[in-house]
Length: 185
Length: 195
Figure 1 (cartoon, each protein chain N blue to C red):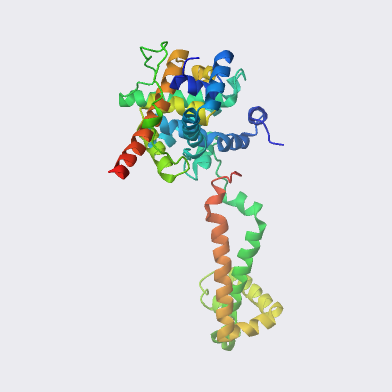
Figure 2 (figure 1 turned 30 degrees about the vertical axis):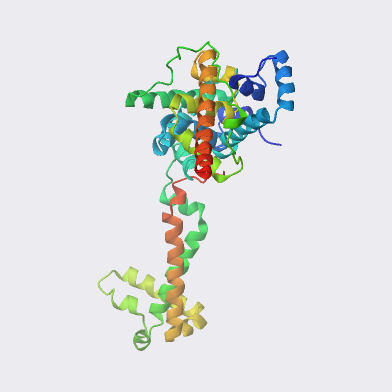
């Protein structure tokens, strides 16, 4: 039996050697520690190439590909608002909070009317009466809140709450997630 | 049970475009390694791979399932990377080796010359990694296809269009180069210790 060449040893490892020669080399390898070391070295190199030396693309790779593959349709502001009615609710809540703070400010108590309508004399009568009606309803139905809003800490509380809701609305409307679809990896 | 590539392809063709993300996720790492071995530059490799995935998506309805999706897709990656190398003017991937059919007889060195190699050491991994990163593209590409992608000779031929002799020859040379680098390093270490 002639000694195996390096190429034969590699083919022996790959299992691509002719069956007869494979048997011969198998016997030689089992008897020679030198050949066993050579096989171990080749196997270790293969293992490294197979398992360790892999390169990954960047984290956003899949979403970048999907952006090219599936064109993203940008939805209109109103459609997004309708889809997220909680936003509308938050917006109404914010406006109400601001209204309460303004309406219940001490300056307005002496006039009997409210600050909003005071500065709107030049506007039409219909507009003034509408504001007055809203203000009076607000006063009537939000009396405990109204009282709380008259105190300094109450005002801070409502302003803080308003800021919080404004943040939520801004986040909902302008966040990028509406423009870029989420891809489950 | 894991969904097969062909099932995902069916879903994509039927209109579920988002299912393609699963296919990209599944093949991106191995394909990236192939692109990286060919182009030797990470940003270029990633760009080429993205291009290859977009091309594959567009060509998906024409995929005839004669081969696996992986083999078909690697062919696209190979072609895109070849174009990049052509633009660079350094494409030697498809040059056919002169001695492609001759058996390369390299004898195994005698036991006396044999250095002690710690196969599990970090040093060993480092040498192999470094050698692959500096290896000629045409060799490292075949090495990656054969070991990492676990492609058969026939699949490599189908992807690259190279003759069997050239594929075998390059694979042998790539492995010999790795082996020589390891032996050289550890022999030097042995000599240093003996001095």
